[in-house]
View 1: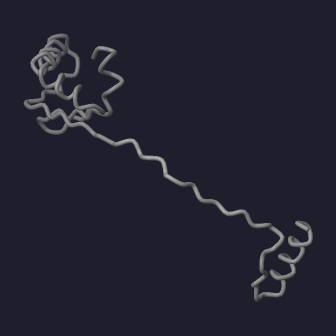
View 2 (view 1 turned 135 degrees about the horizontal axis):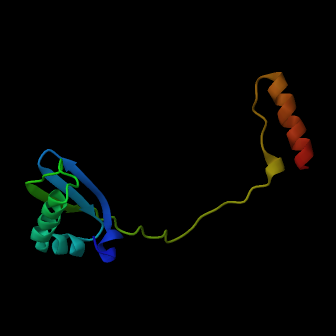
View 3 (view 1 turned 90 degrees about the vertical axis):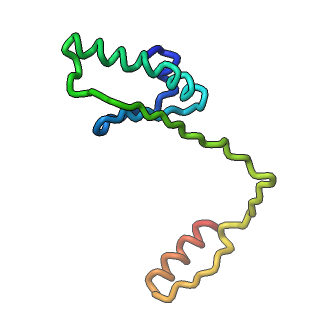
Length: 107
């Protein structure tokens, strides 16, 4: 494959008589569909050179995966609360003691 296609191809799978190619852009999908005969001719050339003889696709299936860019949040909310103002709700006396020690360190 030419270098311009390599960065857009996400995966290539061969199952049965189908060759699945997943690309990241719809324009590349269209280009590969137009060059379908060239892909099959490359596979035939590989067969004549005794390379990948077990791969013999009859059909080509090209799909693209489109993921829109997420929009940033309009407003970022955050709250600042002092660390030493936490409430000790532990019921176990050992854990309560550990939390009290942490609270003393933070003060």
